[in-house]
Length: 118
Image 1 (tube, rainbow, N blue to C red):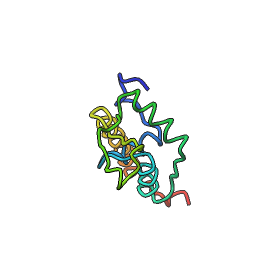
Image 2: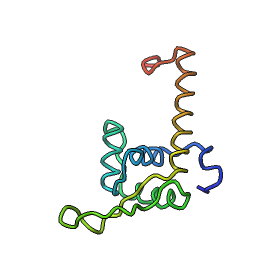
Image 3: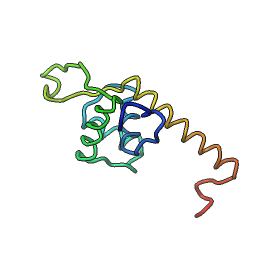
Image 4: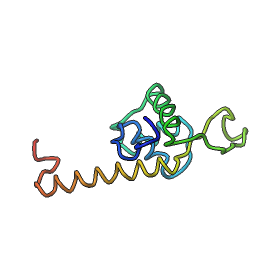
């Protein structure tokens, strides 16, 4: 992923779910994995390899960054790194949501619904 044209490219499912998880608050890796599982109603389970590989590429692309958030060591593991979505990440997420919306509109116009092919 390069920083140029990132908001115009479709996102991978992992990147989409990570951005969605970070859209409401800063989170550390385990929190992101749990939020993805919650958001997807347990249909997506992201392992550490996928998560941290994606996070590295997303930081490089400017979609997310490490947060300055510091946790009280008595309340949390001080080694945890928190991540936050950037302005570019918000634009990329918005563009992806718009793509999904447009596709849903086409499917509805064609009267194609989830049970159509069952």
